[in-house]
Length: 291
Image 1: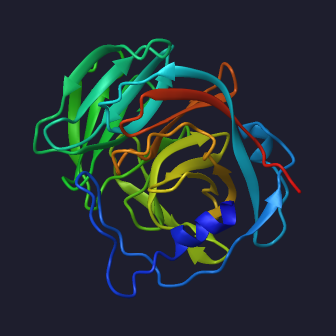
Image 2: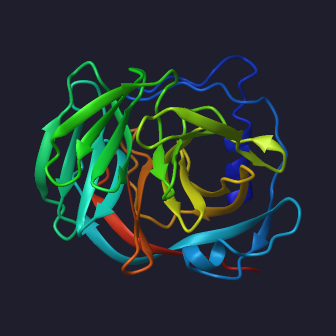
């Protein structure tokens, strides 16, 4: 199942052009052909353990979601970024004229505070750096810095690319822009400090969306799939794939796709949701069944 879906990620049949554009999303041209990945059996379930799993050349650790708890989520929120901080979700929601940054009660899904973004901006991924939150925009080349406690805007900075996903590994920002690149940035200035291509079996992987940095690895939602990739930022290699098909995702509208991943260090588990999803899930990533 994972391998079959990955073929679509790596090769979306663009020989006659690009994919249809969704009303709230972006168009990315991807390669015409790709190799099918080798999927290895997993040996550990937690993020920390699976980050250290030894894999052979070309192998990708196969993981699935184990649902621990289900919570309500605002089904009108086009989730673009998600963080858990001091027991509250920090969430970035998108769409022109509807984008905001909000604080959300994890247990009830109630919006505790919402700050709208100017209508010319399409909000994207976000991450927390100490007492600040940094929020991307899609095509507006602007990142906003917010106070994590009050959601007061501190400053804004410019960058040259699209903005998709963002996470913080404790020393640097890691960003995606729809291309196969991970871009590294200084958390204070937002200046680019480096980049690396993301590959799987030597093929570049496009559409890396919402990100979460955990224990030295980058976990990335792959847009328009039910997959979450685990990426080694030192090499750019995809070392694991989570098949999240077990989640009760809505089938309509078309753009209600998996997007939103937050790490809960206190329980060593993840929260995941999607754009316009009515539910938020607390999950573990565990070995995929074999045989």
